[in-house]
Length: 147
Image (cartoon, rainbow, N blue to C red; front, side, top):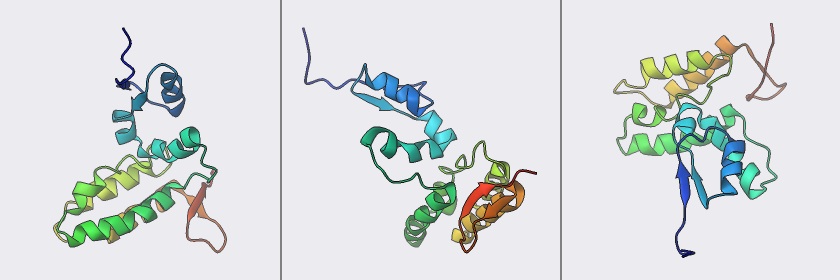
């Protein structure tokens, strides 16, 4: 007996976009929890991978820059910074300087007066510790410099 009105989604153990694609051949939906929490940048690829978006994936810095207006609005509503930054701690996971990013946010975002300058400071920490090169005339982090 079929149940066409029933949507089936899988949750758990999906850690890559390719694994999600494979599961979508079998189920109606895929939930990515822990993998997205540990490495939120995995979500930057979703629109391209599943919705044929032609746009280039944003860099991690672009993701942060797009996040800042939201952070400012929420700070204005009294939401503490660490309530928002805990969700982006893994954004630079696996990238040179990622530990410096996490450390800066962890050590500073909990302060009562913490604002977006903490996030900007974390970006600077990634840049310093990851030895990132800036593209000519551009403030964006673009590519790692190999020593």
